[in-house]
Length: 228
Ligand SMILES: CC(C)(COP(=O)(O)OP(=O)(O)OC[C@H]1O[C@@H](n2cnc3c(N)ncnc32)[C@H](O)[C@@H]1OP(=O)(O)O)[C@@H](O)C(=O)NCCC(=O)NCCS
Image (cartoon, rainbow, N blue to C red; front, side, top):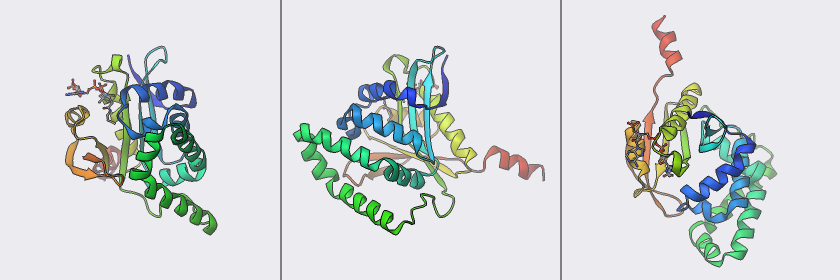
């Protein structure tokens, strides 16, 4: 039996190990376990996020999902509260992994540098409330991962459905995600009713397929309208 619940700090160690195993092709994985530990803790801590863990009846971690109901608020809070610690972990890893350092400079150097400048400027202006100016329309999922020995038994579906419920509860109009074009995950999202929305190229130059699920009105809104 799989149970999905909010992610808590004690899940992080198992999720970091799982991330390295099932998302080994991802750039973030190359930053290493100390970075991923900080990243998962930051994700849980920052407001506006979705962080879910799937466990079995003995609370063994089977999978996890990261996303956001307010992506802008969440990324600003992550960077403001944990940007320094994340940066230190990346630099420490790059210092001992020359190929990573080269790839990092080529694909992400300018973007990361601009991010640091923006973060410092916001601090100087002291006006970063880390709240979006108006309610966002779009929630997002950034990572879904299920342990190899638990795949194919409905865990991924439960995680995604829980995230969709959170997006509905926050009254978002749609939820989006991107996944690499050659990944088996595409069939998974399509099976869950997500619609492919074309190919996109990330700011770091990698190709992804974008998927979207339109949420429409939350069930409670529909009920309120229908009852007058
Ligand atoms: C993709 C992933 C999250 C799916 O999780 P899962 O627990 O194995 O999937 P589920 O068992 O919940 O499957 C839900 C449905 O999708 C279908 N499905 C899942 N993977 C599929 C695949 N590769 N091809 C076709 N259908 C697939 C299942 O058959 C199931 O359909 P059903 O309910 O009608 O039987 C999991 O395989 C995984 O972690 N993969 C590695 C990491 C990854 O690629 N993550 C996504 C990119 S961030």
